[in-house]
Length: 103
Image (cartoon, rainbow, N blue to C red):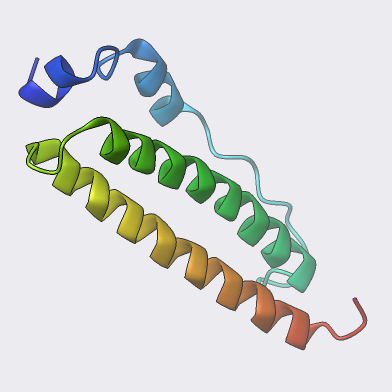
């Protein structure tokens, strides 16, 4: 067990391992090799939901630790990456809405 796991009980739990082992959902096959705007929008929405959880947990860790704690900096980087991912998801959503004006 490393110092991070000692700092956060349950961080080495089997629940985290179980999530990593889940099979990805099957992607519906169509005649074309490209995803439809609706499929991309669904993906962006689901991805944004995951990023919301990551950001929430990162912010919770940051609030519960002093800034001098070494894990605080890691949590800050996690939050920064989640915010960047959310920005990319928003950009993708805007792009798909522009590509699909009938929505």
